[in-house]
Image 1 (cartoon, rainbow, N blue to C red):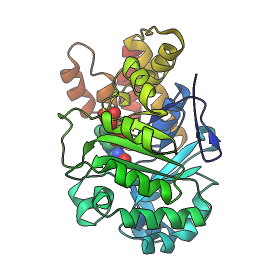
Image 2 (image 1 turned 135 degrees about the vertical axis):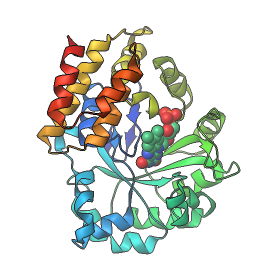
Image 3 (image 1 turned 180 degrees about the horizontal axis):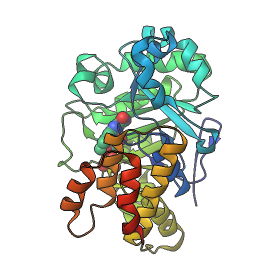
Image 4 (image 1 turned 90 degrees about the vertical axis):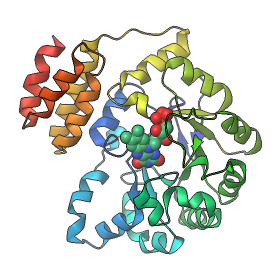
Length: 322
Ligand SMILES: Cc1cc2nc3c(=O)[nH]c(=O)nc-3n(C[C@H](O)[C@H](O)[C@H](O)COP(=O)(O)O)c2cc1C
């Protein structure tokens, strides 16, 4: 299987797990890795949050969970964003504490369209201000980090080539392109033509993202890009990685039973306990995604929402896996 490297990190295959808020915590990354994901990322953590952790700010206690990691999940990236290189310079100490000891690379989010992030002039705001992206990447490269950037095809108009070239010139080791504008909802299909164009025009690895929801789509993305990054289709379905890798090898899809998928959720629960990362809201959200394919899913989901502890969730799920 054709794969690629990011800096000195050789990926074992070209299929990646997208960074996702409230999804890609350490246990979820581990189960996706076990099923074949070659690289995963934390959810986006604003650089201001990392500075809070660096300063032992009491507000940062809840953030510590978000930077938990284990060497078992390597390679893994930490995703962050910010409004200027000044903040990254202020965060230099914590970045060096985290990378490469706990994370292998730093990914700069240049695509988050949430109001909070845009008001902060970071995330997708940076797409209209590529000079700032360039300054951040150049600084991080001067500090010897492996750096990637995740962009969209533009803020409100296409400019992926201009931004991709700036990111490449700044020294980034790879780029991920999500084929939607920042102001486009998920109902609008991702435009893969811009990913293809970027691949033809820049020399660093290009990872394509947007609407990859089947092994076939993974293969199609790999026809035009070096890597295929999956987000929504992996929520409640980490087996998509196993299925995609099987498909890339054999040209056939593998059928997984509902029980096998529930087993993955059980593993997620065990890992959440092992790493002391028990966030019931997140666990219930993920759990309801694991069961979304079965009959009466919505009434089961309502029952799950009423559960009050991880043990209650485990007992509830147990009969479903038999
Ligand atoms: C629940 C959720 C949380 C997300 N959080 C992040 C994030 O923290 N950082 C990021 O770069 N993208 C985030 N995204 C965007 C995805 O990484 C991805 O770019 C987008 O969903 C398109 O891929 P897909 O069509 O495979 O879902 C998030 C998406 C979802 C659905």
